[in-house]
Image (cartoon, rainbow, N blue to C red; front, side, top):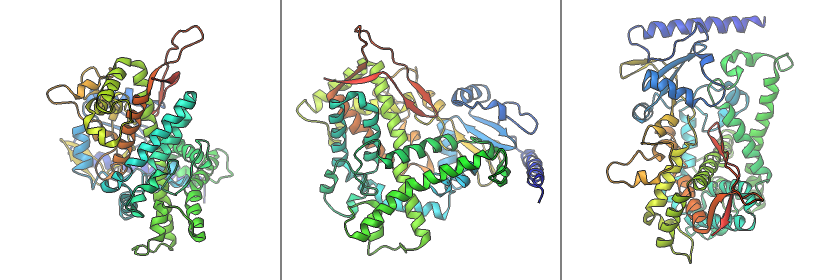
Length: 509
């Protein structure tokens, strides 16, 4: 078969698709948006770097709903929480699908992850398994373990404040992966093992552990390629048929290496649990509980279920870590730049908790300023300016605008966060405590929407609270001092939703 055949077929399909959209939208107008060029549409209007500044400009010019195209693929950008909730929540059946990620999904293998899997039976099976570990009652069982992990972070910072980044990476992974202890014991004694990734029952002693290194490398790849048009093969899916030995097929080798990494990230810890089960000394864990449950309704030995459980556990192991790590970095940055807010928060902790003990989860309801500070942390530099896009399953009409089937729908969370309050560039926890109607709680949009809302939302939120409250109870956060006694300016860098801040150290109070 000629190599030109798939190219010709793709171009023909593109023209037919453009024609279909034109005919279907002839009765109901498409949402407004920037002018589209022939064939390429708005492909070259979308920057390769951060997109939220451009999206904000489009919002100001075109309104709450913006329509663009990229090589014939329709894209709708939602700039208000009202629109996002109306479509993702109230019309969830039509707006819960994912785009086809040719590079990240098909070639790299992330189409086996609950984050990328299309909405349907397989996705629901993943979700049911996840619920075992992350349902509201289960999350309460992790309070003591999360407090012990926060204490471990404090001890590490006291000994080596210069290692803040690696300590935080380690503790975020450990804290977010403490799951399913409740399924095996009614007490929390097992949670006393402070360095424990209970998804698999592994002792993780260093941020340089292979399990964490693999997971972080996989997260970097996922963050890079789970974006619309992130790779040329996403724009021209027919390129995936090019032989691996052919010129310009470097993406195949890149995808193969990434797929091996993804497989290693989920397979190694899963196989470790299976080996320990066979030897009779596997510690309590999510995977252990599912595989060893004598009353399980699953055929745990079937290949399909093995894949399901491997990737459910792998998604729990990887998901959430990057965003929580970034949120705590944002908190550290804010405390460095706004020391007066830090002082207010520490004053509240001293009054409520005192200085003879550390805060606990039970103190949370008595710490309104800490609660407001967490909300402002999530709003001030929203961690994911745009979440992973959804895809419409069928034609729809919203507020008089036509949204074709197959449209990528992207919530502009950056604008939603900044548009929700006055003086959004300021870090002001008090905005959530003033009389009258407070701004929208950022947790209503930071953790996703509708049927695809993050199942670990409450676990991550609890981790943020106990980590932030514990750090403020023990440390003063300030700019680093040079050899002349001058403060070193802070130059944070923000990219792709991941926050990194530099020149920040912690001093014991």
